[in-house]
Image 1 (cartoon, rainbow, N blue to C red):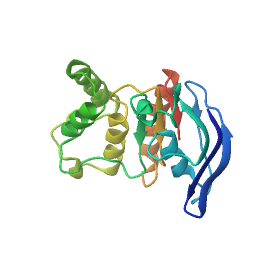
Image 2: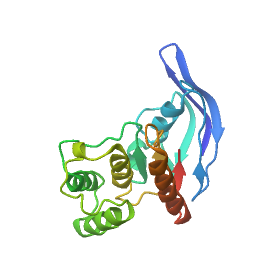
Image 3: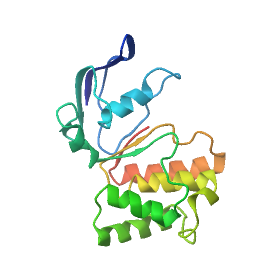
Image 4: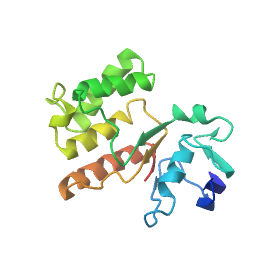
Length: 185
């Protein structure tokens, strides 16, 4: 739930008093032209940058009072897929799983789920730099889901991806939403 959210950088207002509510399990499309404050808003919602004004509650956490508290409840996939290209597919999954604090047994189960769901089986030992952009996209999405977040934030997740890969990606998003994960894109 966002009420009166604003974000200013010096003399520039990037976000100006916006309000919206997103329901559990909803796929919420946040649309606007380039430079309209979409990414800035997502970064505020994720607790990455503080707002200049308004109130922000994400998954029952007041982001202004407790920005660190929201981080374990959300997944975030940036526009540029924050993966380590010099690590293998599996090493990226291990790294992000540890960052999110996933217990080793649970991490193995989640990795198996990800490999199957995202069509990554057989690529575990492949360096991430050696896989296609579509595979990186699915890996980045999966890494943001390893800790089973309540809300998934996607910042332009399909830019630069071919139509077939885009379709497969949105099929995964639909499955997530149907299982109760909120998706903010």
